[in-house]
Length: 520
Image 1 (spheres, rainbow, N blue to C red):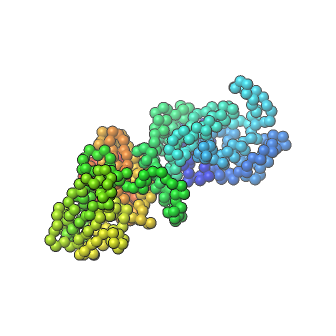
Image 2: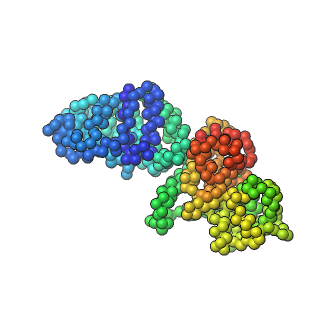
Image 3: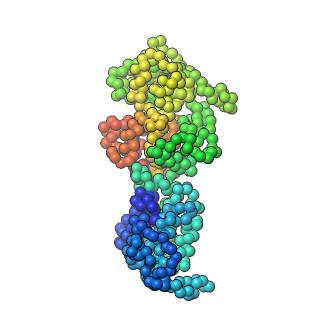
């Protein structure tokens, strides 16, 4: 069987359409088909001007035949057995260049009006050239819902019905913009495998199995629409950052949602009751818990032989004085805590110590934001957001000693890292998880880093920003190292053996990371 695929995306190989067509065609080749892929943009097509020269003056030949590459494309089209129309969804229809291609197939038919051979009481134009017997549609779109494709599918079904194609169906992919991102390709390994399988089945069985169709229709980003919105926001933020778009130009209409850019610190519905209070999408946790999270970032190799004591004194957050129900009674615990760092170990104690090496007095929310990587500790100190006395040199060494996330360019988490971490459930292998019930915490330090956790339960995986309560496995890594692992630039196991990142907790989960997530 000869298969012709038409890529109607102006972005050609940089498009989601291409990344869907490529594994589909590879699957067809594996089943014995001969395939050809044409990028319509490369044809540089002139638009049909409705002159009917191809009908009356030079039958079968277009007036533009010497101006572009349509003649060669039509030879491929007329000799194919199956044509795959691949087009992104543009304004609920096909792309402009795909429509131009279809319009330019007019020389294939003759002007005479005759009864349709298959449809009663319907008029038809006779065909003067052989055409593919079969056709199908492949289309991605940016919206997350399938119904946006309704008008596009109806158009191609009508075309198949009127032009006497056997319509083999469609492969539609909502929420597909991330498929075009080169750095995220490893997230979609499972989806591409399903497309490959669909290609084999189409050639072998003339249809896609119900099981494969069901897999192809699953959400590309598990975790619901909010996870998808978060991924999308990270992507478009990255694009605007590239062109240095001012903040006041990024939202030209109001976004009617509460605290869209707030970051939750602990998950809702936790089975560990720490008296967590939720405010919008943000969580309050006791002072002790916040410092324990910080201790988990301690890097014993940062400064060999370091001996120091750090005193913390927290003032209640402004929210506690706001009168919002539940906050005024929230128990933050003791306001005074100190950390002892002693030659590679770090311990936390309640109360005050007599002779601290460094004393930090800070509002609760300031240190919270520093720990979450949304506020730079050094600039916050310089701007007077908290006080420090004693060894300021030690304070300057905090990013190395504790490896907490730090804001990157423009005081933001690296958008590429954000997309990868929130997209990890896409690469989740439910078969490898079996009956696993676990939470994996990622603390990604350094510039542009952040905190994320993956929740695995009942054969599903969801991703969230922030820290989880009592994670089963915690991975502490420099953001740039984990980004390179996720993109396949360095081997994750080898990086772990070389101590480029650390893991604490259930090491059995750590050993299965490569099976659980096909990106690693």
